Length: 168
Image 1 (spheres, rainbow, N blue to C red):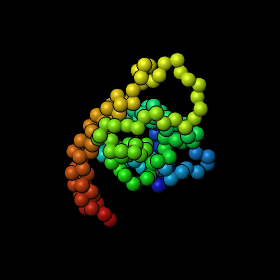
Image 2: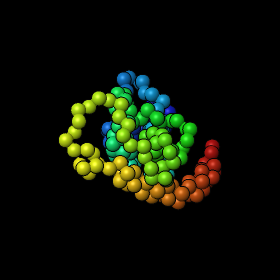
Image 3: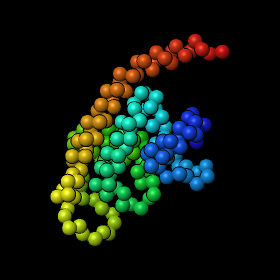
Image 4: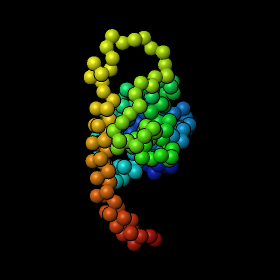
């Protein structure tokens, strides 16, 4: 995995710990898991702080939890969409989950839950859990990240051209 992502084992194990990712058994990691780590590596290469990525990760997971995406039973439910490329304007940045509509519309399909649960005393809105509020937090942070990426791209292009001089 370290060779494929071109990062040291120490860096990758740090990401696994900080992003609270389940460890694979032996060398077995799904393509989605590797796609997530590639995304983190690319964003770090584009000078996006790990703090911003961790905050975005928490917001995405909270949003998906509020929408009951976590109810499908997979231990890696938050990674299972990573690597998919269809409908990119509908996908969250890190989890790559397809929200079913363009995220900029600030509309969500609420009320999907695939598990049987006992009823809560109060519904989520009364307890302060509002998926639209969390989506708004997500959109603000992802917009800032997009601005930072746009500012970094010219420098990265110039660095890649300059690196051509270093070829043996």
